[in-house]
Image (cartoon, rainbow, N blue to C red; front, side):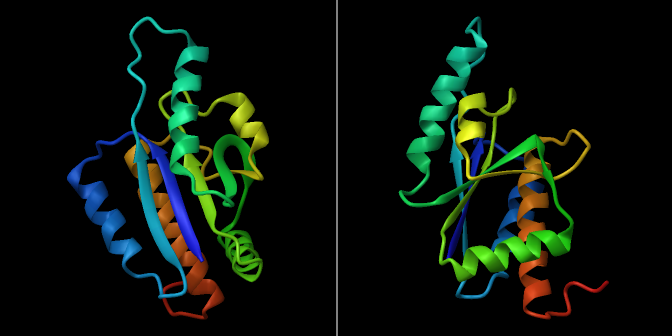
Amino acid sequence: MKLYVVAVGQRVPDWAQTAWDDYAKRFPPEIKVELKAVKTEPRGSKTLETLYAAERERIEAAIPKGCRIVALDERGTTLTTLALAAKLKSWQLEADNVALVIGGPDGLDPAFRQAAHERIRLSDLTLPHAMVRVLLVEQLYRAWSVNANHPYHRE
C-alpha cells in the first residue's frame, strides 16, 4: 500500500522537512509514504475560481490513477487517532493506495473537495501548511503503530 500526501506548496522550513523525513522512514515496508508537493498558483489579481482551477489541475496530475482520494478540509469528519487507525486498516484491507490532499492558502476547489472519496479534518485550529504535513505524517505513523500494537502509541 502507498500513501501519497499531495500538498500545495513547495517550500517548507528545514525543521518541517526534517520532521517529515524522520516519520516517513519509520513506516514498515508494507506501507510506503510519499510526499508530492505541487506548485501554489501565484495570487496576484486572479479570481479565486482561477486559483482553484490551476491548483486543482496540478493536484489531479500528481495523484496516481486509482487512488482513493481523501481531502483534508476544515469541514471534514473529525477523527480520533483510533478512528484514523481503523481507516488505515480498512484502506490496507481494500488494498487501496490513498492520496491525502492538502490544499493551498485558499483551501481546495469546492468541486474537488466534494468529489473526494472522503473529507477529514486534522484540527479545529488553523495550522501552517508545513505543520499540517508534519502532523499528518505523524498521525498516519501513529495510526499504523496502533494497528501493529507498536509501543509508539500508548494510551
